Amino acid sequence: QVQLVESGGGLVQPGGSLRLSCAASKTLDYYGIGWFRQAPGKEREGVSCISHSVENLDYADSVKDRFTISRDNAKNTVYLQMNSLKPEDKALYYCAAALFGSGTCSEKEYDFWGQGTQVTVSS
Image (cartoon, rainbow, N blue to C red; front, side, top):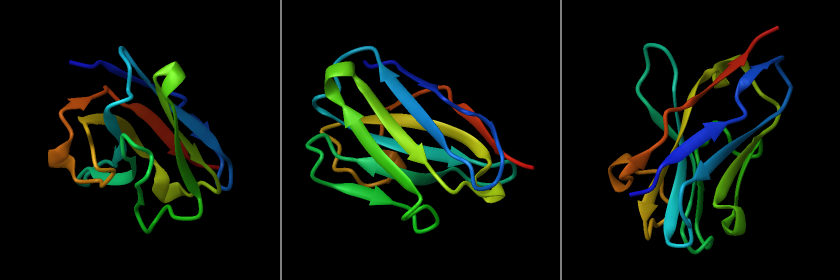
């Protein structure tokens, strides 16, 4: 079992930046981590994922070149740096963990989920 807590969400203007954090209750050395989001009325989608080995990264086309995923295993934390935010990025953002995760954003791979942090992009 691993508990995940997201933070860093908030209200930002279009073009602004936020950094989300996903803090884990135990070492993440053996876990792939994914960031997912769900907007009102839409299905949850994968945003960015990173393998346990850090060798594999995955980004949704809609966030490539704007979002960057990274991990600090010493702090048991994974980050999602979000730049050039757009109104369509507004959603509840979740992080999830998969033991020996491959770094692909396939939801069924992930066993542990946080409660989410809200991101709102509006002027």
